[in-house]
Amino acid sequence: MRPQRLVALVLFGVLLTAPFTAATEVPLTEDLDPPVVEWFHGEGGEETLQRLEDDASEGRIRLLHWRLNADTEGSDFPNDDARLRADTLGIGLGPAMAVNGEVLPDLDQSTVDAAVDAAMHRKVVAFDGAVGVVEAEGETAVLIRGTVTPLENLSEHVIVLVTLTEDSAVDRHGRTATHLVRDMRPEVAFARDVGNSSEVLWTMTPDHLEAAGVDLSGHGLGYHLSVIVVEHGVVLQAHTHVLPSSTTEMDRSTALTVLPLAGVVLVVLALVLRGELKTDEALPAIGAVPWDGESKVRVLVQAGTAACTVTGIEAEPPWKVSGRSMHREVQPGEAEVVEVRPSRGGEAPLRLRLSIEVEGEGGWVQTLDVERSA
Image: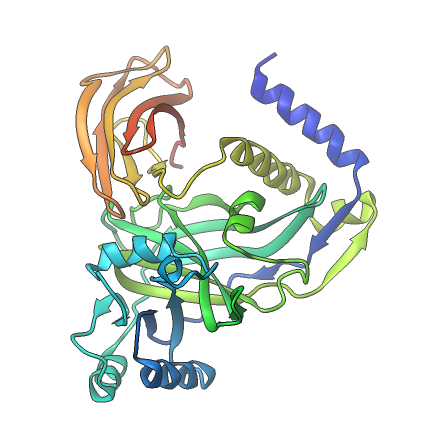
């Protein structure tokens, strides 16, 4: 029996015998956010930050507070994602601001107001699905499941940033931050062709949330999750959701009624497998655009906080790919597309093996199952 099937069957048995605590899912909203204003914290700028917090409370902007200098302050606020986002936008030190991914030249109120007034979102992707909090075996995760459908042809550089913010965060020294970005996950594995829908299951795993200082013991109360579509760092559209704030203790029969069994299996399987990987912020996110079975496969590599190099791609039999050796460097926070042309596999499932070197972390081989487009 294949190891993956054995794991799935074991999990299936666990699901039938284990109690559940499941958060009520909420549908992904179709409403676009107001302009996304990103604040990169630094010494000074308190008056500007206060105005932004006021604007956010009035719904004029969606504020993302990045604690860029948390480590130098002795704070336990997370800053790895802040550095990654700052590097993408070319920001070295705070305080600094960006409106819809466009960095402002100064923090003057007139500059900020003009940028916010001029900012616009255009809807390039349709999301259909739900966001929720799932708890199993004492482990809690945030998940988004559903479909992603481009409304126009998109470049491979269009990615989705899933960001989790805490409404009112407090560090170990009692310092506060509103709308603090606790966690950010880049998602790249979805179709870029207009009308081509992709099924997605995006998760923030228990170990990842714990490392980011996220406490969901209140089952999501006090947190917001944003789905932000960006291209080269510039925000194209954004949608923000309040995490579900109520849970219900269920027996297994009730849980299987509320959460479809297939969905629960997928969630728990994803949690187990991703938890085993212990993915660090330095490691890249890797995905493949759904493939039509004939043209080249487009593999997307989004570097983490460390630069990485793709040194080779192979296909598992019966498939073969040409040009298996390569040297494609990806700088921190950047995304690159690697194309390969599979052959000789017919209708067999396509699985690729990417050889990757990560600066300061060493090398490993990443297995990637390529989804067929409809």
